[in-house]
Picture (cartoon, rainbow, N blue to C red):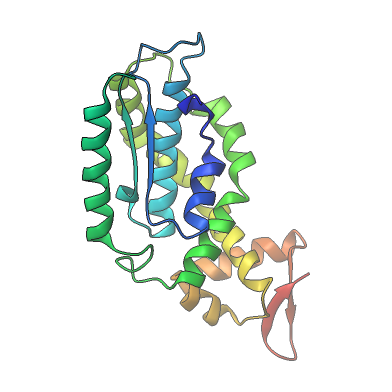
Amino acid sequence: MCSGRVDLEFILRAFSTGQDGVFIGGCNLDECNYVTHGNYDALANTHIAKRILEHLGLNPERLRTRFMSGADGNLLAEYTDDFTKKIQELGPLGKSEGMGVKLVKLKLDAARKLVPHLRLVERQKLRVPVKSKDAYDQFFEDPGINRFFDDIFGDKLAISQIMSLLGEQALAAGDIAKKLGLSPSAVSRHMIYSSRHGFVRYDTTSNRYALA
């Protein structure tokens, strides 16, 4: 299967099901058998997924993509061995990040719900005009792109996490902030937005927020 077919959803789903690391192997860049050069899509998805992991508080080094030819069996062994050692150093998903299994899954599932939105944004704003590794690395490491990604994704991710949390039980704003590691002011801002859009309601009896 072309590495370009490894969708962003597949990567997040793998982590959500408890995988401690994800390794993607693809053909050498500029040696794709297809006119679409899907391995560049894999490279873009890797950059985007790493940004998502950072937003979730997970180590982006848990995801790695390497490119090689079909004859590079020795390189494949070397790459996978090195990646395995790295994951062993990091330990189980969430451990080195100070998060429990349940919270990690909640965060990842919340991020997965935003994949359709990210596909639209990528198509419109995150397309690299030149197909070269340097161009892709420079594009996704540019401070302006990072700020843009944070602006369009950060708030939506926080709200998605809050919705997932409230899907389990009604909570006070302080409890939401504590569980998700958000500031009280950020939670308050997200609750105001969510209330205005009819996503949540405030129960004055229990002083808790619940899904509308």
